[in-house]
Image (cartoon, rainbow, N blue to C red):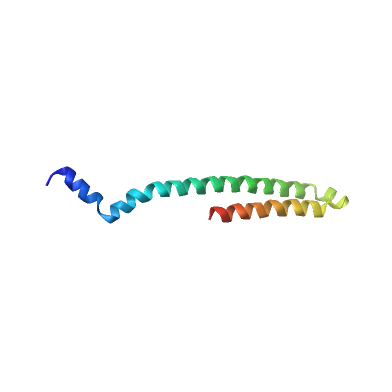
Length: 89
């Protein structure tokens, strides 16, 4: 039996076909997941930065009654963050 016929016979094996066909699909899915996670990290950073600013300036926020505004801002960022995480999952 020659080497090319052994190779072609192995490639006809269903297990090998799954590996050959599945690898490009897996690469595509990993790329999509990585892109989504990168977007999610950016949104998380914005939310954490805004939360830190709120905590540092809590006296001014209370003095001028800006609680509702900042609560809404942080809440919207959190909802975008959750939406991105669910999209990646």
